Length: 200
Length: 200
Image 1 (spheres, rainbow over the protein chains, first blue to last red):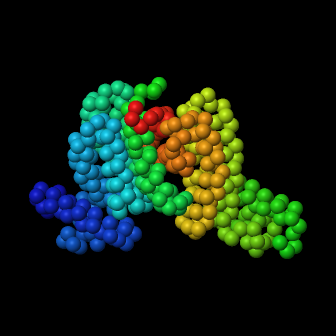
Image 2 (image 1 turned 135 degrees about the horizontal axis):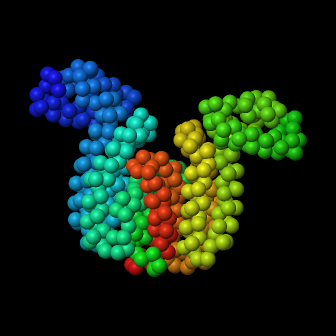
Image 3 (image 1 turned 90 degrees about the vertical axis):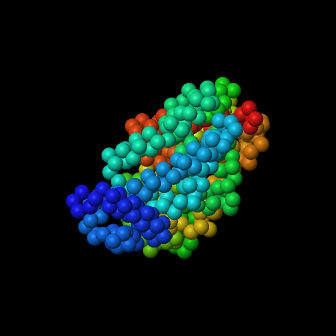
């Protein structure tokens, strides 16, 4: 990249991701302009496009960064579990906590529309590559019936817990505390359903 | 209501709901104006507000109408099941099919923001009242452990299947056919998890 050493380039990319993460968390995507991100980093607005194609592209990089961090948490939680079923429960609780507490999740719809299907597929593929080894080792430790599922399917099944968390407000509108009631049951129900033989 | 007999009033309300349902399904909420609904019904725009407070209010009435129709389907599906577990699976498959095929579901976010929390609570309460007897009779037939859950919690747990269906496109972006793969496993997993003893 013209004008920057590899080291400078890495530093700037890192700064853009971290500054973008802070600004998006605090102000949201509408109130965050490219200049808001480039000014503190000390580069011109036009230089931004040497690193990212768009604001949505920066968003993806931020989500990937957070996903990497989450992956470490997942691995630690799974290690701490005494049974495969408990590991599944811990994994889902992490997913839900992440969705509940991460302020960027609320912007996902805004960005999902501006991400191309190709990029989305690539993002999905990369997430699969990162998460599937975790699921696979969990399946290996558990044996059948958990081991008999496609690991991607197991990941997708646990992913419904995340959707529950994303729609937390809707559950709460039905009645106060309803989200917690459902969450408390759905996590062990999914873990049990995945680890019990189909004809039990 | 001034100027209308009870019979006329009922006929007009019915026509507004059916006309609104057709128009919203076909053109969506942005392209559907109040006049588009009142013109075919043969009433003035201002008269609309004697029946509904807003377009969102009409949307609620339409959703309630569809929910009533769905309730009949649910009852028939549960009747046709040979075991409680099968009944749970049939219930969830209905929920998902409804979410997948109902074109109004895609407008829910647009309307959710314009519905007051009070109205939403009332709507939730009415849905509970309609659906809970179904769940309760299912629980009674099943015995423990299904019978030991709060019926509203059982309903909420099965509701995650609907969220999966609402986010169908996102699953499909990860890889083709992924939604179906996950759906095929999540339904029996939830049904099994709800009907197997916690320590099994």
